[in-house]
Image (tube, rainbow, N blue to C red):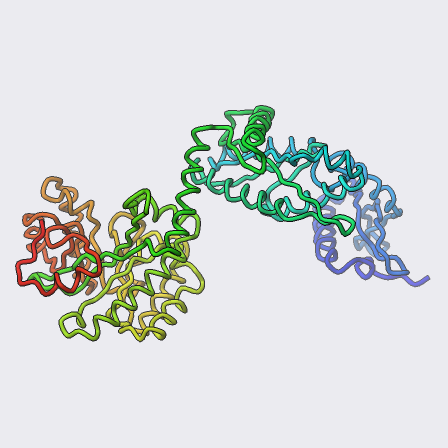
Length: 528
């Protein structure tokens, strides 16, 4: 019989770990040669015919005739035993029909999720999913059809959640989903859960095909949010179950939260999100412009501000809809629309001598800027519209610096090459440091209006403003102050080196149609 090294019989992915384990054991033997060094381990090996078997080895170290360490042992085939153990575990913790975790494993994972939430303060959610009228289908079409439908339902649920979430079957047509690592803010967490719930409801509205026949089957979903260990597992499941019955009572094919107040907040948020999407399609959004002036009172630029005039709600505050658009991802579509409108404006201004030299500043949200295609989108817009890139200024907030400064520098540099300039908006309120600032190819810092508002009364705000102005001057950056509302504020800013201003002292934001007539008015242009 020819002897062969054990590593030649192992699957390649196991070799390194096995060798490392033996090295550790050898080191222990050499360090304590008089101690007993016997080991039991389980390893996969390849049989002579190619299939894998599981071997249990009992081995120990000794020394050969020359005093060299020698590992000697005996192995036995335990493949059937290991498979039996796996089968027992599968039966103990997984549902036989669907392969999903069963009640026992769900309880264990829910306990872990509650403990993790208590540590990291993230939110979690339990979703109780019950199929509508499943018993009728099971009774009329037979258990075979019912079982196939449950298997397909389980697969659809898996596809609607993240790999880190748990989808479990309690029995019958009852499923429970455990979502972890949700935002700490309850409203944001609820919004995320609602999006998942709507995805599930939509997936179930698609026909189930069984034995070449289509079947309709909707679902009702109850949701209970949790954060920390205030509630135990059984209480969370009970609340989610109660919420599910509320969804049934509402007409089925619906989602309901256990907390009625949260239900109202999330429903209102979802309605506003739907209205935003319709609003963009129906032309309800518009740009307003607020002038930016220099020390001599001359207009050198304008900031484009997004406004939404809803047919029923009236004017919706940007504070209300911009944050929601950022959360739900709709900011990408809104931001692209604003860029296109800005490009068209710059093209129109370029044809008018008294407007051709005016810059247009456009706010870019963190989510929009982080989008992998952002640079290409701006580049394509400029190429398509032939807008003068040197007149476009993109305003970023300091929050874009949190994740990846190198990516920020790369994107700004790429757009700088096209002629686009950048301003750091709301400066002083976020995460900037001198180390970041000196790396960013910016052209402007913008003093946040919260500092300007009280600089005449609050020594701390006045000191911050003076510091920002000094910093901008030392770095060769223009500094513009926003929120200037009084002559006293302007005088203070000008005394300390500020030569660019924006605020109600000069003009409120105005519709695009009013911009050119306002520019052509004789001075003074003070609308305070």
